[in-house]
Length: 252
Image 1 (tube, helix red, strand yellow):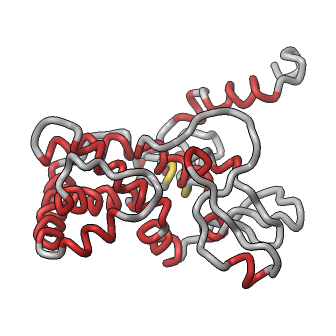
Image 2: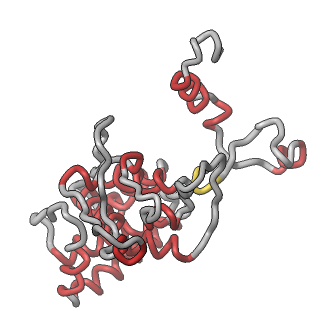
């Protein structure tokens, strides 16, 4: 088929990712595990953490921030200040504004000697040499990055705004956001945990408006003034929990 298509790589990639074999779940019943424990027959899908680029892109997509324009120059999203001067000297890093902050990670400007830190945390390969295959690690820095990086805090805030724009109860809003990030409805136990977390966040931020304002100040995108500060901060906390779920950053 590859030869017959004229060596069309894009067509072959599309055929692979839309195939039933590629799209199947990683769940396997005991009988299947007994018959094919090493998955040599590809009877189940592979389970793995998403690549660094996909983790950021899906957070932006869930938040409604992702710019889907194809092509164009490299962009410079958020990055810790002073990193370039400290590690490479010379000219400092100046982040873009507007849509440059929200383009797909494919377009992120990459300085060979100072890779984007959030990418490195999630095992993006270095550019000094060609990488045939990437590695996957699991470290506390990854959770810290998802909870504290400006890009993910801003994505959490915008996802929270999408939740509050939905009519209905708090539980229905949580279920809506859960479907956005996990592509399924939360079960009763998960819904109770998230509702309890929302109540705790509301109590905390209602008593500390300064902390609410500080949380909501992250990122360049404007805050929707239609929502009360403490309420939006509470939903931002829940949105951050959702973006940090193992299921969210893992290909199941």
